[in-house]
Length: 257
Image (cartoon, rainbow, N blue to C red):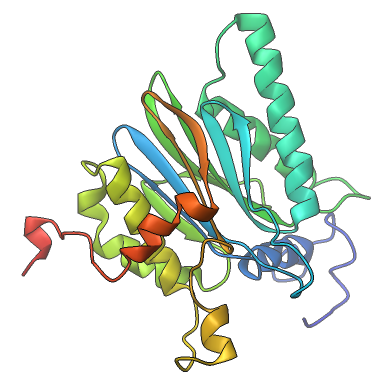
C-alpha cells in the first residue's frame, strides 16, 4: 500500500483530514475471510469461511462464543480478535456477577466500540485491525451489530464483511424482506447462499474449484436466539445444509416477479 509522511501514528492527520492508520486497519478487515450475519425476529445466524495456511495446517477459527446469548464472527487480524474476545467475555462475567443477569447486547457493543476508539486517538497505539459481527439475543430481541477499527458500530438486519463482501451484500439486499419471518433453518440456508457468493469460481474439477467450494471443513456457522443458546455448527452437522445448496430458499411473494 502507498506510504506517505502522515501514516506514522494515529495522532497525525493528513492535509486531506485523513488518519491513514485507521484506513490501513479497515483494509485489513476487507482482506480477511468473509463473514455473513442475518437475523430474524427470534434468531441470529453468523456464517464464515475459514482459511488454512496450507495442506499441513488446520483451519483458523473465525467464530467465538462470548456467552450463551452472545457470539462474534471476525474478519482481519485474529490476534486482535482474541484480545477483544477476552475483553468481551470478562465484561459478560462481571455483569453477571454484579447484576445476576446477562449483559444487554447493545451495551457490550458500545463498550467494545469505545475501547476501539481509544486506540485511534492516543500516541503509541494502533487501531485494532479486525472487524466484528456481533450476534446476540436478550430481553429486547435478536440483534446483529458490526464494529469497526475506527470505533464506529452499526445495527443491522443482515450484513457481510471481509473478502468479496459486496457479493454477499447484494444477495442479502435482494432478500432482505424475507428475513424477519424466517425460521432458523431458512436463516442458515440464506447465510450459506450469501457466503457462496463471496467465493471466486474455478473450472470444474480443478484445484482452484476445490478451494472455492463450501465444505464442512472450511465453513462455520453460529446460531442463537429465543430458546436457543449458542451453538456452533461444523463438520458433519453442516453437511445436510451444504447438500441442499442447489435447492434455493423460497422467495417472498413480493419478490417472485
